[in-house]
Image 1: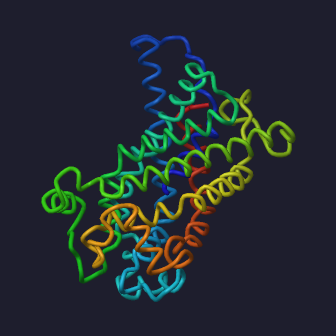
Image 2 (image 1 turned 135 degrees about the horizontal axis):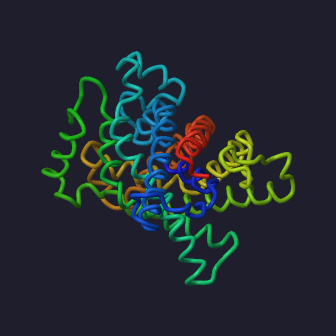
Length: 333
C-alpha cells in the first residue's frame, strides 16, 4: 500500500509552527494556514512520488504475482524481475507508474491533512488521547485518502497488469474511458473498494500506532542517541534518519502482514473482466473464497508478501530522506 511512506512521514512531522507576523499583502491567518498546507501538500506529494518511482518495478511484479498473470504465474519474485525486462523491455518494469504518480501525489496530501484533522477532532471532541487516538486517526485518514483516489489506483492496476503485445488499454485516458463505458459507469471505478477499506483501516491505523509508539519511546528514553534537532528549527527534536527508517520499516511490515489478504482480494476485484475467473470473483467474499480454495494461504492470500517486505526498506528510505529535504526547503519545521 503506497500510503505507508506518506503516512509515516506525516507522523514524523512536528505540529505546524505558530503563525509568523503578517507580511504586507498577505491575507491574514487563514491565508497563512492555507499556504502551510499547500507547502505540506507539495512536500508529501514529492516525497511519495520519489519513493514510489524507486520501488515501481517491485510494485509491477507484485500486481503480476497477486493476480496470477499467465505469463509469470509459475515464477517467483526475483525470477519475475528478470523475466519482465526480457519479455517487455526494462520500461516494462515501470508500466502503470504514470497513473501511480497521478494518484500518489494527492493521496499523500489527503492522508497527511486528514490525519492531522482527525487527530485533533478525536482529541477535542471525543476526549481520546495517547496512542489510541493515533490509531483511530490513522485508520480514518487512510480510508479517506483511499476513497478520494481509488479510481486512479484502479486504472494504475489495470495498466500494470497488461503484458506487451496484449494491451487492452493504450493509456491512462483510454483506460478511464473504457472502464466507464463497459463496466457500469462511475461505479465501475470502485470495484474492490470494500476489501480496500477493510484492509486500509488496520494497515494505516497499525502503521501510525506502531511508528508513533516506537518514536515516542525512543525519544523519551534515548533522545541524544536516537534524536537530533531539526535543521530548520533547533527547538524541534526529530528521529535520526536511519532510526526513522528502522521504525518505519517495522511499522510497515507489521501493518502489511495484517492487511495483506485484503490487498490481494482488492487487486483481483480491480482487474475485473481482465481475469478469466471474473464471474467467480464478483464480491469480496467470493474472491477470498476463490483465492483460498484454488491457491491456499501462502500461494494465494499471501502471494507476493515477501516482495512487500523487500519494498519496505528502500521505499521508506527514499520517502523519509526526500520528505526531510522538502520540509527544510519549504520551511515546514
